[in-house]
Image (cartoon, rainbow, N blue to C red; front, side, top):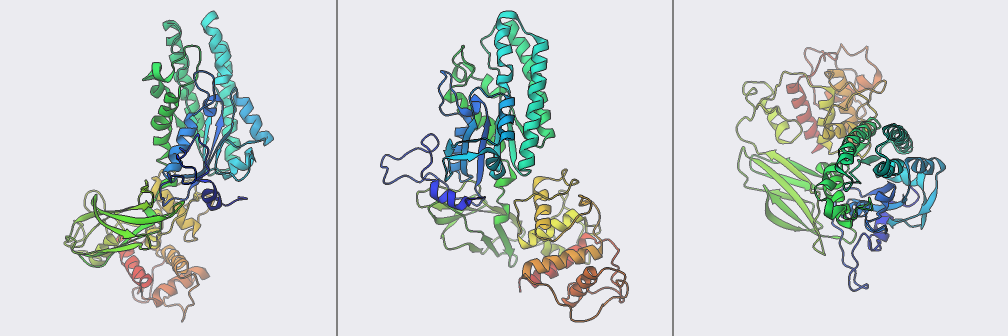
Length: 540
């Protein structure tokens, strides 16, 4: 990126356009509206037609849904730049596609840019969030004509097919330029609610079909479909007040932003702050909570600490840890940290951690297990979890996905990248993020684009992952002191033999009768012991 996001955020957040950030009465003393944040502020680009441009019910460009989305995201510390300069009234899907293919340059309409004009391809490459609102103008002439001549089904089907094809190509072009971008495709609302009842019934069927097709097209391309039909339909007189104009009022655009787009956008993994906080269980009634520093356009004033939803302390901004004493044994706690700036703005996405203090055995199936103490410690430290039925399943094999998550949680590693594996899409966003972090930091590798997340981890594979974790933690390779400690690992490659030797020399593993059994699977109980020993090594 030619200009760093940090530069753009600091240099332009106060100078944002009037259409997105309210201007204080005293221009020499502008009010700070921007909240502290633990997330990396991202760039937002809006593409499309007059709906994205912000044309209102009287044909004047004003505040559109994209402006309201941008305003909220900036005020809550989510974005550092926004541009709707590539959204043009009258644009069809062909126009948007041509702009991308021709890499047009247009004037910035928004905030956060150090230049007046930017090129479209560069903007797409730099954006983490893109909204696409297009297709209505492809059909509008036919739909308007239908009020006089009746619905021309053949013409509508043809125009719809062409529009959907173009939308698919637009999404493909965007993904080529920026595979990581999150694209939100707006669905259609009923633009003609004042037409006759007969036409209304036909339009409803048409819109349902079109929205279903666009949703399928968007999701196939890796984009996110945003339905808008119900939002507009619930208050037509207020949101579409002009029977002669298909454009929404400002109230309608505000509703689209807050009821359709923002609830979906805010669920993005971009806003995940769970890695910004860690808890270290000192004993059965004491924990130390640590968190990363929050960022702010002016500066953090203090941090508020909440225990199970109750404010318990307020700390100066130069403090990023707190020790909680006299907790109750065997009790669940949720700790939340909130950042406050001098203007009183509060962080929106707050790091939160949940843990259970020590006490009696937490799992019903570990009471007589040889690894019960290790399992308890691993669970209390947040490295390993049990199952909803109260069990730990200590003899069940641990999978590659589980080990990746355990190692990432142990080090508090994060990434904004996505893992290049095609077989992890069925996992939740948190697990996918943990696998991506393990890959980005060199702890895991795949083969042929796959990670094989459900495959049990062999003892040899686990050793290699731990060696990579060790090197990630200490930023240097481990130098083995002696020869191979086991007789059954000689046939393995050099990295595996060194990893197994390292674990032995560090006292993390002991083997059995001079053998390591490298091809054997690793149970959850064994993994708990290894992870506790490894964690003790890291915290020395």
